[in-house]
Image (cartoon, rainbow, N blue to C red):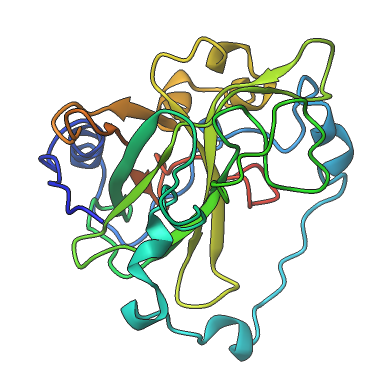
Length: 264
């Protein structure tokens, strides 16, 4: 797999984060902005009506076994795991679709890089179909595309995936509902109990503004945090176009996550 150059980290998301932090009192923890993240119940996102909690949440302290190990090391991840172009393809074959590089940096609330974070992704193929027995969309299965990969962030919090751009697909929310092209992200901390899940969309997709899941986020800047930006500086000519998607783990302007029952 090729080695890609990383874009200047002091741009875009990080610049906005630095501006935000200058207005804050230094501290170890910034309270979450409830107006920034989606509510647990968003009626236009139909399944959230039955999935959202109806009663006050109960704090459950983690046990020692939940907050310790396993520790993920680079020896646990094969370099091919992050290359979805080749990790499922037959010898000499490749998946169908627009080849893309998806890369970025994982940051904490103070814009410090978070190294050695395990990132897993899963996605539909270029036709908008998942390799899953419960996906019955008419688009065909691509025999050379598995749709999942994983990697560890490096010492500066950077990660890279090579994949194909997923297609949009219909879903049974309301009549004529379509999901924009997106890739699911799962981030692990030092143990399996420390897991965050989100989705990454792509700049310029007109379906983003029509998606009830995306529009459940009350602040447009929060929506923007979920949109990967075109990055021509990292594109490989005549090979793969590139998008950058940075992730902030916590704080008032944390990337919106799906795995917290109160909406973040």
